[in-house]
Amino acid sequence: MPKTKPQKVFFSVVMAVLMVYPMELYNLALEQGGLKNELLWRPFLDLPLMGVLVIVLESLIAGPVARRVMRRHFDPEKDKPIFCTLAVQWVTVTLMCPMMSLAATLIFKQPGWETPAVFLQTFACNFPVALLWQLFFAGPFCRWLLKTVFHTQKSPAAERKAKTTN
Image 1: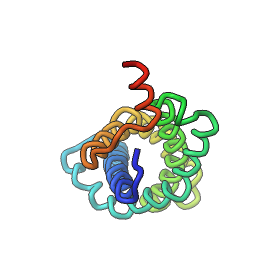
Image 2: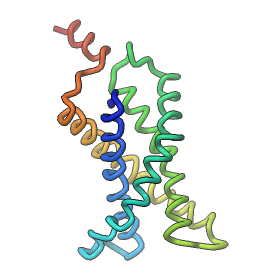
Image 3: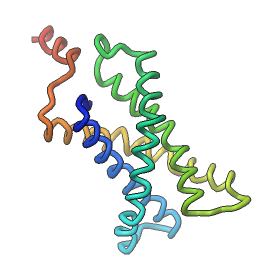
């Protein structure tokens, strides 16, 4: 996980792109009745606005809450790092998905009086996809990329565990 300010900025930007582009593409495909080649470029138009919104909401709300919830249930110094990571990912998606679904509903769908129903449908369609995408692709890939680019070391708990198992 990112430790320094440059690592945090890098991680946030990469994670925002890795979540916004596929979720925008998924929602466009739902709207159009299926994925088409012409839809592949359209999420790039929404990426600047939605990417900034993701970074702001994650930095101010979802990230701090997710880390607090994780620390309530796990001790990063004693528990396996994967449990801490999965807890943060799960809570982050659980908080970000309704916020971003509401934003997308208001910005792109402009449903008027049908806002509650359209939001609930958008959220229900997005949550399972966002959670699975985060757990199985975006999260692992972003952490791998962070380690590769910044040559980060393992956490102290992971290093201690490695020493005791050898």
